[in-house]
Length: 414
Image (cartoon, rainbow, N blue to C red; front, top):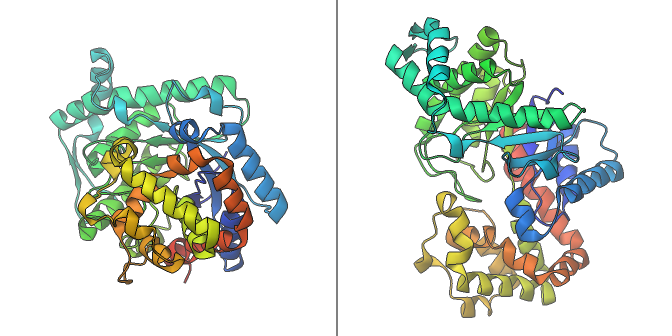
């Protein structure tokens, strides 16, 4: 299965915004940009919300049918490992194999040495097209990179073969290494791609870790010039690996927690155009926040539900933030007092939550806490879901506009 040049992961916590998300893709297509929608949801999200992989497939199929989408679309088993993959296999055609936890675990010594011996031709100063500086790899670096990453790539191979043995239909494969402590250098990425080739993995997207912080739902924190340097080098390395290792021609970078990284979008746009490259951008979680904005602006019961979700989240700060501590930076002292929030108008709530950094009321700490508070909404059950149905028009409008105006247009549309 060949993944399109541009694709976007459109996670939908409660399975209510499929049409609104796909409408953004349709509007982009009308402006000449074809984006493959990839509905994605992780095992953790399913556990928290009480959904199943089948419900994601049903949402995607229903949206595609109701809106007449004729192009390719995908359902992603997001951040799966060998322990969680089986329930996704019947319903997914895109598998994000997360092997970050296996980084640093050593493969068999004979396998490490065999890889180092087999790829000794990479030692030296490699000239890679479009890079002004050569990629430098010495024998120690080659060996130690294999020590660090080979087991993780082998684990990806085991997961891939497990899926392939149980799924006769074609599917897209992604390897994810972003949820780890340190970014991969271009030299490491080149060797990781060599390992992927040796493992005979038909990978179409790879998610490395970049410098800086990709916090949930807020803008990039770091040096954009450093990111630009890394991103361009990584694309050049992928192009080189495709040509020299025989990897899939459509192999491309995947950017996780890619939503709301407005500082980086001009860089991504410029670089993929320079290289005529593709990109996979994951935007999971944004539709959930747009739901809250829509409920707040609807007033009445919807606004009260949004207020109550924040009040509960504030009181359960540690519990809700713990699973996401590596991808959020919340200053509790800058969170608004829940009692004050109870007095807010719908506009005040929406202005604090909407990711408009020019607005004086925008509060990134408020936004990040609510980003990880979807568990509270899930616990409200039908009360929350019915509120979405009752206010679907305004909620859907926000979901579509956020995806199209804040994400797709800055990245892909002139």
